[in-house]
Length: 335
Image (tube, rainbow, N blue to C red; front, side):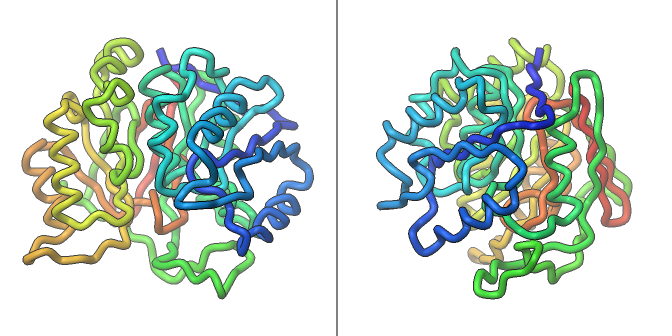
């Protein structure tokens, strides 16, 4: 049975950096975060404002602070500033047995921590925006849904819809009141017809990083199925940050060979900035190949990942994804 944390009113956010911290030239981001959350209690860890050699600090310090924040009763939700590169260094140092059921939210490198926690504890985790991306004066309706999702009670459900527009690339020197620069029309796509419905237990994250726990004790999907979801089908949501099409193909095959796609009901792929072509092989070919092999519905260009905004997906929740004419609806049930 999945354990769902609940975000109550008057919550406290713990900000820690288990991957990358905020470098000095971006320290003003924290001032903006404090202003944006001036009515919310913030506890800011020692790892947040430092960055050296692709990490916020030594892995032991990052792991110690993450464990502390996950166990403290005065912290209701943990949100890292953003992702990074080396969250994998702390995966074997997380004290899974003593995590207090609370939300932890993020994406990119953080998604590795989220998936490991859910697989090893049955505690639901939230794949959604980072705290740095919430510092704007305003928030679009897709991003802004995170709070309502995390305040959901057990046995309730919530619906989110595909966005109207998305950001194709980051333009940090041209900030907006929404942080993001929405320039492109959102259009979900399907390899499985124009009217698609997929349902199952949601699991997922950034392929670039979650693929590295395949075959390890921290990525035992079969054990998770047996202990927490009673062999229900899994609906995977996945996104590719920077893998070439052939590398992404290899990662997906490794997941398949390890049994991650056993009893899969479908896969939804987030938008990707990768437009590389390798000897004629593209990301669309990656999607087509996995669709042919698994013989399940495949959607792509959904609101998930490094081209915001993104829907808040809950690892462990029962998800129902409806697609029609380029638009999508995601229903999540805390059952």
